[in-house]
Image (cartoon, rainbow, N blue to C red; front, side, top):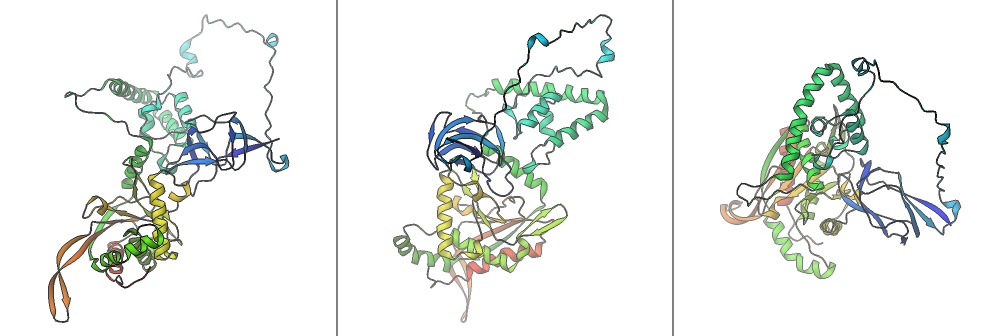
Amino acid sequence: MALYELVLPKMGESVAEATIIKWVKQAGDMIEIDESVLEIATDKVDSEVPSPVAGKLIKLLYKEEDVVQVGAVIAVIETQIDAEAQVEISIQEPVQINVEEIIPVEISIENINISELKDEIKLDITKSVDFSTADRFYSPLVKSMAAEEGISLSELNSINGTGSEGRVTKQDILDYININKTQGNDTLQVQKSISEPAEAIVSKNSSSVTSVSGADEIIEMDRMRRLIADHMVMSKQTSAHVTSFVEADVTNMVKWKERVKSGFEKREGEKITFTPIFIEAVAKAIKDLPMINISVNGTQIIKKKDINIGMAASLPSGNLIVPVIKNADQLNLLRLTKTVNDLASRARQSKLKPDETQGGTFTLTNLGTFGNIMGTPIINQPQVAILAIGIIKKKPAVIETEYGDVIAIRHMMFLSLSYDHRVVDGSLGGSFVRKVADYLEAWDINREI
């Protein structure tokens, strides 16, 4: 017998921690290789952690709702594998204390001046903070520090986080405490007198809010919706959003899809959509204008080598997720189609791997799915641009021919590009969305796939 340490695996670039949602297996359960042990959630996607070994789960090192760092040991499995290939667990014996050796100390409180001691002794009179109504995610360390320092939930929500996705870190808490100390106890008391009653009102109302008409319903945001909300607000606060629009004649593209779709479905066993065509056009345009494929780090512009295109996908819950097609410029149209279909299918089933939502350098969202003609999408940080595709509609359009101009019925579509005006000027943003439209308009109706 040997003990195997199951660690929280690496889940993609920039993901350093995850929250345990549910233990699928409990201590004492038998586990097969690749069988799911627990479900986790990151700020990008929910996922499962499988076991790389078979054996008996003998110990869980974290509870549900705990936040765990990548690489941390989360469980211990007893296996039949050679002990030399495993990492043995050393459990420290508890320290035995002889009660008889404890010397009682008598303390007299007579003649003690409390006012002289209040600056030397910190009295913990703060009740535990209820984080169930928190507007954003806080790690156990941050929660513990907030409770110890008497920081109310409303104060905590007001702190600007410097961590990943705007999260509040240990240093943010320490800085907040130091600032309050420099402002003096009077200022601190004023802050508490303002924040605590407001929080009490919110807490009271949250448990007894009723509709005047009796018909309204109050729905608490789920975890993913709260993350999306935070990410969207952070993006608007970070980037100077500008949107450029172009109308494209995609008649040849539509006719081509109608021509090949039945044969493609019979041959490949799956449908072909417009999405891989859009992604191919975007990848080509990025290669022509690579300065749209960048991110910003302070005053530095990071030019990305890889072209990783995210596609916004709607989930059954109504939330959105953005799986990423890695190295999209290196895939032909057939590979793009299969990759898009696979990611979209697994996104709807909540079976995406964490790494499949990481590393995007540009995002595409299809508003036409909902019958919209155009939109002004919010940039998916830390990227600097996002392209929205509108619905394809038949419209009368002027066509130039060798015999003169004529009016014909054409399939027309709007494209809108939101970009970060801090680093992307109008000439680049406008040229890029026009370049994508040019590739779509020049589609070869006789192309094979």
